[in-house]
Image (cartoon, rainbow, N blue to C red; front, side):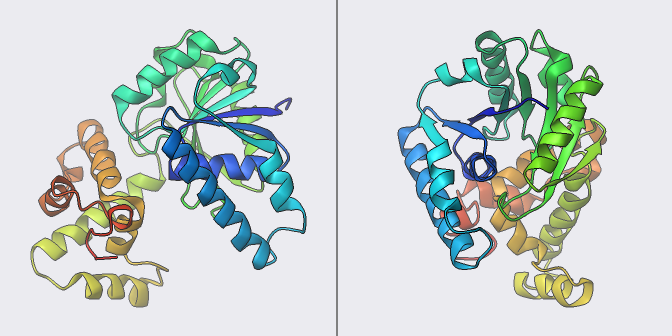
Length: 281
């Protein structure tokens, strides 16, 4: 593996977490977003995260400062030209992702690996809009990125062995556990998780129990650390609906998003990030 320079596209919750982790482990990272306010929020979030890790003893003295030195932000794409790998973390919208990969393919060196943090969209379809589909791969991180150890590594139809090997090694080098998955809608994590969240929403819609009680059943009866409705609020209800729509399109109507969840999204009640979802925050 010969990767030192990493370009992260998108400064939302996932992008900022990805940038933080790689900078913590010694990589030079550029975090890009066209929205200057998003970059400011990302830096503030990273600063808070590093403080918590330092206070709890999860990172050694000096790591916080060294991480911030290795991490820079950019409002333009120029730094992508020197990247060894680009990790895209724009919103879970196929049109946005395909356009991002067309642009990245034009701007980056032919040796650069182009990875996507998509949680459900076809890696094959993303790779097909580039001239290097063999170097396009999925790296699906879990939220919160600094704490969760899993990375789903998803090969598209054309992703080659060398790209996969490099990405698996890269994941291990930052303390993550990579699990290889095939390119099916939702991969493994969301193929299993989203139907549970969706069914919990249907149970709430049908009045089977309150949101609090549905979550308590899963926490106390199934030993889940967080109930499915609280987890949906944490992920973002808009993200959950978008993932379910991809799965419905690719796998059938049993993945149809619950109407209640759609209605909450239409109301702008997206969960924790807006202060209201299944719960109020």
